[in-house]
Image 1: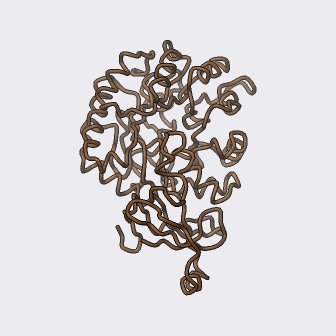
Image 2: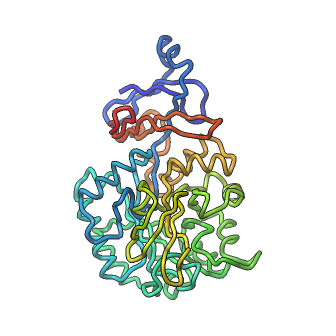
Image 3: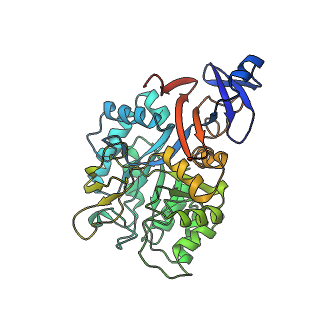
Amino acid sequence: MRIHGKLAGQSEPVEVIVEGRTIHSIRAPEPETRQALGGANCWVAPAFFDVQVNGFAGVDFNSPGLSPEGIWDAIAKLREKGVVFFCPTVITHSFEHLAGCLRALDHVCGDPAAASCLPAIHLEGPWISREDGPRGAHPLEHAREADWDEFLRLQECAGGRIGMVTLAPEVPGALPMIERLAAAGIVVAIGHTAAEPRTIREAVQAGARMSTHLGNGSHLQIPRHHNYVWEQLAADGLWASFIVDGHHLPPAVVKCMVRAKGVQRSILTSDAISAAGMPPGNYRLGAVDIVVQPNYRAERVGGAGSGILAGSALDLLRGVENVIRFAGVTLYEATAMASTNPACLMGLSNRLGKVEPGREANVIIFEWKPDSGSIHLKQTVMEGQVVYDADAGA
């Protein structure tokens, strides 16, 4: 396979030669090819890795009845957005419900082809704050204290596939659990928290490595200086994921947070729910009723939590477009935040993150129009195979 275009971050077109699953070499194209590419606006970048996907295209990963057909439908639709790897995310619920969801995902990952796309399961909760605001759209009745034995039982249900856990460090039992999770090689993320700044620092010392959708899952009002948002932004040991849909964080906030955390420690995520990639309307996330507005704003409906953002209808391709506009980062930096950075965090740098010889061929080919800020995906390549071709419609 030969891929032609400009590498994100460079100005001259190249020819990327793929042999089998691997990028064999990158060279200047032949004169006739260079001439043909003269007016083309074609770019090549690492494919995307989304560390937080609750569902997509009508498929809900928070359903114990998840089928192999359903997961493959979601995989195919995510490839249309440039995503080749993602962490299916299971949120706060009863042990029995969580166990059922994790068993379903483990069963699907019995297929090596599916397991290759799903390098880890992200368990978001249930050990989170019970306070309104920090709890977000997670059900109050299932938010609870951290329990290491419960985690071990959930990990058994998942076949050992839980690779990321989001929890609130102030919850009783959370700090010892962070130490144990980190020692087991699991990425610990701080999220849905009302912790004091000191507790945030203690969590980082215990081994926490990321802030989950920083700035969200928060109180509507917090102390202006001493609060859990500033403390996480200031923590050099924490990566931070951001939902850049224009609703979870205003553009000015995105700009400030990315500049404070630095591009190298910033990760784009969709936090997509099953309604992402679907028309506006009423949907369900686990046990929670959701409405998606025409502007792709996803809110919880009914009860005291009505109107609270509940996941996102975003896809990562739009997130890359948005972060360029909101934060003033370059195309190269934006694509790195959706590929290189999450791959590094999750230990997948050997498979994803750079387009260079010797790397596994997981790339996207797209048209980039800086004036309009739009990206048109042409092809998604995974392990040296075209898995989405816009011209072919598949």
